[in-house]
Image (cartoon, rainbow, N blue to C red; front, side, top):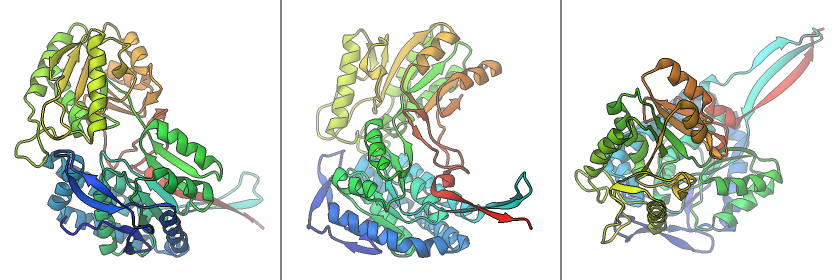
Length: 479
């Protein structure tokens, strides 16, 4: 968006950082600088918190229908501005324009979904079992929230957190990732246009996350943290939340298994693999990380997948016909390079890709590896790049054991034509979500989240708003 703000959004006003600091926003396709945005410090964080606290009581009293209508108007504005929002997103994080347009639609849908949930917050009434008291149950907003979003889906991760907070009646401080602040600032401007009252949403863009977030979490006035990011950072934030018992929901790392059985429809399996692996250039917590393919079909599956991957066009996301944009930054590409090199050293064979191209930008080619050793580093960490690492298996018990042999449990993918096996394996996988004969599980109407070290709570679906609501129980004598 040509008029995208670059200042902090505090109490409904656009302001510079208190100390005047700014930070660059880089274009991963060229290495150039797109813009400079305000770089918030501790004083700015306190101002954002104060604005949220001051707005909380009145916002909580706002009629559910009024909150619903604000979300609905924001949904419509986002769709009207699809092309400019997509171009902005592509510029700051690299994904191809077609995929960015898809994210805009996905992001908008969270606002539509939660606009409908805002008017369905209910309570309860009944007589307690001893007959001496009536029970009244009501729902109320948790209070001021700190929302921390990642760079890989900068618009959708914002709406997935902001939507239920608005619907529930919570005020917010949003801290977007420093790599992709522009999408969040554009979203704040849209919500202001949609009629969101001043102070309900405050946005602090910063390269000093620790200085900004820790005082808020330890200060006692922020009552809810919603975080999407790495498990390592999630653990740190949980420790900071402990001081004042801040309610938390977290969507953390993943190490998704992609299991292809011998009776799978290989056409569907390869199609699913392309989605589960290559969405967002592989930079997704839901990305298929470990491909377990039955030995009897492994060679055919790998060959088909390699041909599909090799046909993808790599280039700047704004280019015509581009399928694969750059990775987010040089560090992200270096990680992928190191993981592939380690796998090759341990005996993996490169079917396609595997070589970093010359020239500017953080590009890495779609890559397929076979004969991957189970002790390769990419088996135990998120690759976050366009690399499909294929291993073979012989029986169901073996592959379930290997799929579950990880501290993470976000999502798993299973391809089989057998109904009993499909349900049995899905139930045995230690994950929060399963893609059964599909490579795409994300949907605003479904609860998104994982088990084990992949997080706490759920986002989206009917339960998404629950993370932002508390119960109050009132006992009344029946006399």
